[in-house]
Length: 607
Image (cartoon, rainbow, N blue to C red; front, side, top):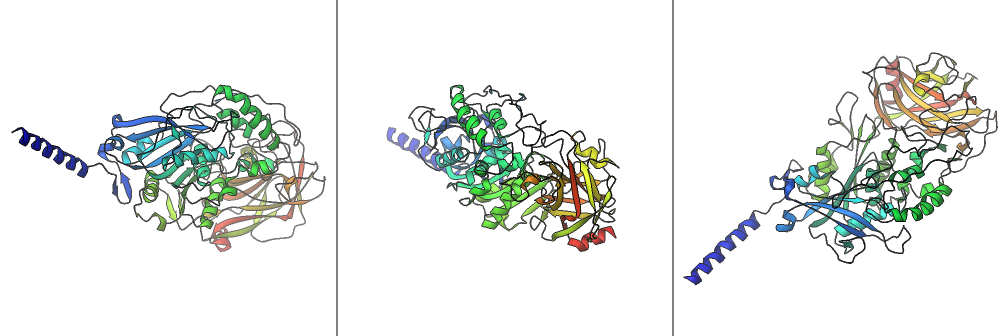
């Protein structure tokens, strides 16, 4: 009886073991998307733990390789059933707190090229507790069959090292974490100890996403070509710190943060070990940044080239779904397009999602889901065969983009617009060149914001040229370009350009797309090269050519397209004393607008 009972118990145990194996929890897919798995959605059953991943660099000067603080959120089945899942990974310098609203910006009220008064610095009070670094991403992805991993950037939170704001260590740190996720034995249970921890629950397939700085780091990791990083979804990423803090040789602040510069951002995020901060400040902020950032000329140099991810894309192979807002005047839309265009040229799987609003704004969850499902789970859902560009039209919610073959719209071509005089009132934009032998002059005065200048019927502080009233809508898609032939009465001057839709819409019902179509800024001293400036000879004319920010916008019938040229932009530039005069040679100035159906389409809209 005892033997039979033992055999019965063994038989029952084997039955339940086989049943458990058959019933093992697995991801579920429908219509090419990972679905919520009932057994994975109960957060009380999730396992959360942290660890430190050793990198290949030492940036805090202590003679030891820096370790990054990493947190993991995974279903309990990865422990009890041997379930292996792909990873959604997010990294950030913000997780442990920032300097908040501390007064650390540069004073922008000084003459161009003159040194600014010394700015204030600050110390960040670190926040956050172990083992949770962040709760972002977990509710979207863990129930759908992913493990979510977070890490703090070098020199922030409990991660060792120094923040460099775009330096090599900010690419190599997530690379080290991804290497750990794909089997490398560089994970430890503590920041100083030798007890190792392995990512035994990982399939070795990693995707990254995040917004703004957190969207920059997926691209930074991808440019290392690290094995296992299969797909990234950067949202409003900063892809070049030069393009973030400079524009065609001009010192230009990001929108909403007048006076910010790269050393300000360093102070804003430096939440790491207090004992390491003096070394980091001296080495990074007060030496490398102070010597390289060059607020005097705004020129592009080796310092900025080392913080431009377009220069590092050769090893990149991760599938790219890019997301940005056309009215993001913080991290401007050029940041996404320049990387998207390079990925397209390299043959990397690519897709771009643009909406009409400001900073941030991810693609619809279903679009992200399909991207990660294809490249992390390997489900053949056809995303690579879908239209490449998804653009939210002006009246639509961000969840409902319109599909286009690509961006810019393949049906768009450049249309030349020429200037006819009218200052100090309003001149005209013409599709035909008519030699006028005219020159018009504006007087710089930062006291007047661009919105006031665009609405003014008469102003000596800007030049404004309008198209005829549109009888039909005009679809702009691509990168407007402008060449301005100008002279200054001083050796240095700001140059600002807005493309506007008039009449200007005021009030609570105004939409973000109603008034400003796009913008651009340049330093006339850099007319020959953004890497080399030269003082202007007063009265001598120079040709200054540059791109405005990318756009895809439908300008409705009844509006006029306006080109506004002015000098100091109250929201973005250094603000010298008023009085600098810029004289524009109208015959030598041309605006190129990428318009769907080209010149024929524009002629149809105004006739």
